[in-house]
Image 1 (spheres, rainbow, N blue to C red):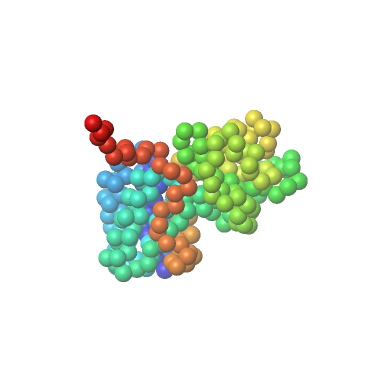
Image 2: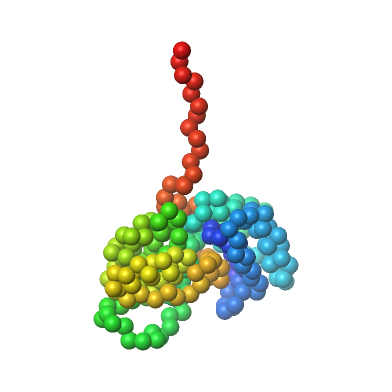
Length: 237
């Protein structure tokens, strides 16, 4: 299987093409940026596909991040993925950004650098900045079993809500959550890439996803920060 993975859910635009059985993508690019995802995505995809023998016609599937993340950014990549899926007549699957961050720690575990102070097994935590003092969270065991379903919490409450055990934290809000954990005298370490969604693992998760169970549909955990104004009403005389 050959898959194209796309992500614009966070402050970055990412894409890669991965073949089944290959440890590394055939082509990959990530641009860290706060704005302009819609303008940057299609040229980036063109650059990626130009490096792949067979081009678009060689693709068997598309994976796209569905959130949580930026409301506008999520829709950019999903719209592009759906359009390519229809044009190429191939399935499109959705992948959670939280799951993508956790995947490297689950699929490629490393030996601890020091003996943990706690006898409990580690808790893998994906943490993404939800702005305004809130973070998106998901927690799982080293085997990938979900311990805390995706949610959004104030940073001040997040540590006490997490399952017991030393924390291995990844994601854009990992440094913030680690500081909160240390302040609460809890063992924690930051691991992996924190700025952008690891696009290679979006592709890997997309390969094993069931298209019927993982639709390319936005995963919104909280209401948008900006709401449209209410319709203007004229006062009655």
